[in-house]
Length: 304
Length: 49
Image (tube, rainbow over all chains, first blue to last red; front, side, top):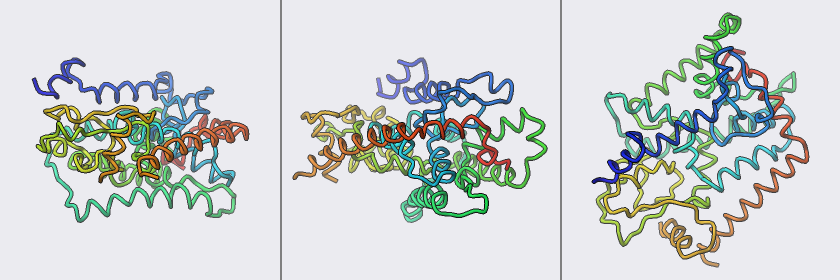
């Protein structure tokens, strides 16, 4: 029985990744009343940033979006965002981009869109590699530099990324609120049209390319990618078991060279490579202590 | 110092930094700023205003 088949049977037809993604999306957006009444949750859970890109204006959102919070702290008070940055670093150093692969609701949306039977495209390396740096530029310019240093007459700087680019905000917050609230529907103008256009572009791109937003645009993914190499959660390839079939690389949604660098900054730890590996050479887990297994896991990344 | 040691030092260094930042942020009551922002519908975030 193949690894993938075995994995699916355990969870009644859904893969391990899908089960976790669905649970995460439901837990992070569990305020059902919000969807019924077009309101948002206002309780104390919202003092805590969730690890994923999940708009705090989503009617169901129970926590705060770290990217929105970071821009709000920088843009309104212009002080160093100790709390938000600390939480983001904590998620990053514990999990790395596991957050993107298993917990992010917008990642789930992109995964499902890619399942639509439509022409699929492998982005040529010449375009793909440099385009991946775009997300770091977005993180630096739209999320950090502009909110921190741009000046406005009112003294309040808009959250540039959320306002002009974030498709998760449009999908999770904008569309439900406009549908549920007639007053908001009246005031939705050019900006809303622009954000719908961005969302539509990413939705269409997601049916052709696997996870285009995560690959090229997501500032939170860019931040977590800096920790992939150091995070407590690590991928590991046992070279003594690897037969070099490259099944892992063919199935990877982020086009990571798994055998060469399984803890690449682009790896979202979705576990697809682990599932398809015919010899069970790929494993994952927390490697907190300086044990033989832990050293081995880091050593794999170091050899690249 | 081997690269492996450097990775482990970085790992625990980042963990300690993250915890310190959170504690300082909590001491400065920054969580209330987040709450203040997150309990209102952010019209800019959803593309309205």
